[in-house]
Amino acid sequence: MGALGHISFGKFYMRRALRLLPALILLVIVCDFATVAIARLYGQHFPIVYACGALAVDGAPPDPPRATLAIGLTFLVAAASFRWLECPMLRLKRRFEP
Image (cartoon, rainbow, N blue to C red; front, side, top):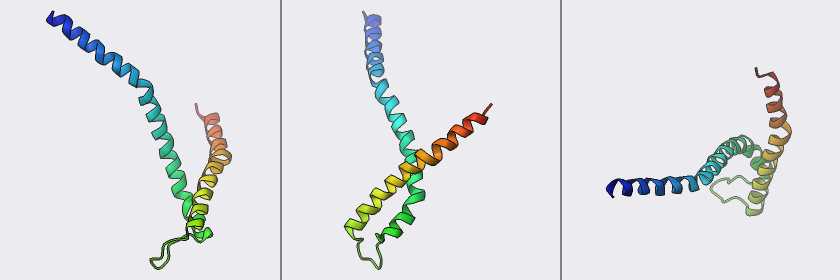
């Protein structure tokens, strides 16, 4: 009975791990996308924030409508940059890979 108890105990954890597998795969995909998106946003946020006048100057808080506009424009520019600049470059890169 002791050996059979260990087998059923192992099957329980295997079933539980297999149920969690899709969630873990999704988590890896989301984290990979988030890493790329954050790098893209980091490179493009400052010029947009500066152009919108949403910088905090002399310790004064930024103007909320301007800050909201800057955040929205940053995400929009990052998405457009990915779609029309990075995707064509990645396709071109794949064309020349062995």
